[in-house]
Length: 150
Length: 204
Image (cartoon, each protein chain N blue to C red):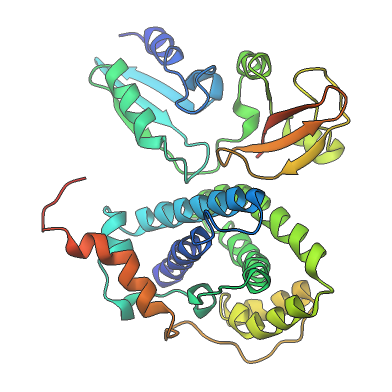
């Protein structure tokens, strides 16, 4: 396989908890290295307590025969790594994508993914998975899930 | 250094276990969700730190005799009261931020500490929100006073002045890690039960 083929294969692996985005969209594939027929993929977890970590590792191994997957537990992943395409897929599925860290820290604005209003209320810092918060939009009277900026 | 990391990992494992005891019975549905998520994060942090110390995180987490755990007495306490639980969460997060920030400077574990710190930011928001809500309640104030010497035992002696300043409390004698509270033996029994009862060589 070429590196391009590996990236294309990884693009087809959905996130187990939010299947509208792929592992590539999510930005958790840090690097793909192909040398002398051997494929090495560096993978960064989103949250350390993510229960889907092993599942995603196995999905990569199923998709890319003979791959070695290295899980990198440093600080290289943040929600800023989610690609533009990934953010749009999240929004289309009703998840408010995480704001860029710089914007979030300065503005503290949370936009409703349905009507675009920025007048939304925090209902709970935590949601169905550690990476999501629950918010409510009074304008269109919709609760929605906000992907946390981390 | 390994002793410090083992203490950190044991703290995160045990507080995660204690926080998870609210799953299903928290006073608000939102808190059921919050405590379950926080517990999941804390146990994830414990696993990541154990993995820096060993190839088999489960064995390190659950196959040690009780007296080899290095957790601070604060996290061991079985708190059946919401005010005391919130007091501990808040004190723990203030203390944890100080030691995690210090570890972020470390060449080997700095990256991992920074990743943990990103996630802890949401635990701190949660703890601060509750502290604001309860800070004038006598029951909460009593709980903070009761747990404060334990909170000091979470951090190194050199970090206690900073902890006192951030918590807005006077430094007192700390309840040090090294010995265990009476609440720890039943918890150890529960945490390690599955692995102790499984035949050697069992696979999951």
